[in-house]
Amino acid sequence: MTIEELIKKTKSNQKFDFKKVIKKQYVPYIEKLTECNRIIEATCHKTVDGRKFISINTPARYLMFVMRLVDIYTDIDIAFEGTKATDAYDLLQENGLLSPILDAIPKGEYSEFSTLLDMVLDDFRDNEYSITSMLYNFKESLHISEELVNEIIDKLNAEQ
Image 1 (cartoon, rainbow, N blue to C red):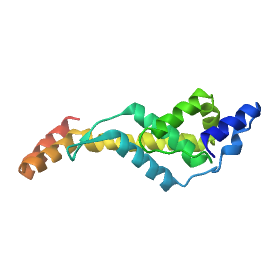
Image 2: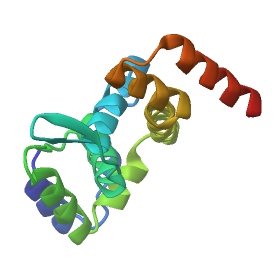
Image 3: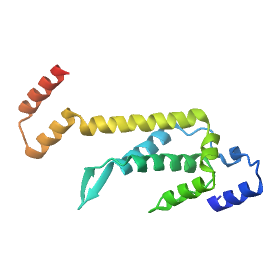
Image 4: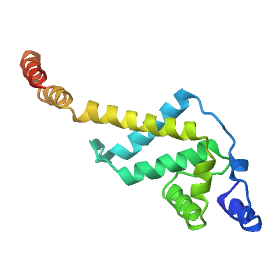
């Protein structure tokens, strides 16, 4: 159903049961993990002149998380091209529908999805921002001796 159809239904029925829009009670782990990876990829990288840079966009991550939950767990149609997800978010919020929809999603599912997103973000930060990762990337870009890099990494790890 479209958001506009949902708005009409909720306006004509003050006691609308938001559990009626829930189409899934459980989403498989691998599907959640795949979605979390997509969210992190879309909100933690920016491409400029064909080169990928790290650029964390926390508000976009929140928006994508919430709208992916709505898209995956409900029968509400959500488009993600351009600014359509932002427009959908604003329309749901403006009509007081987003919170009741999110409340209708099974609590354990919401919690697990959120936890997985945090884990994927933590892994991204560790893999991209750790001193070890930066040294390896620097070494690869300058073709520095692997022995020298390993020696530096060993000293850093000993200090931690």
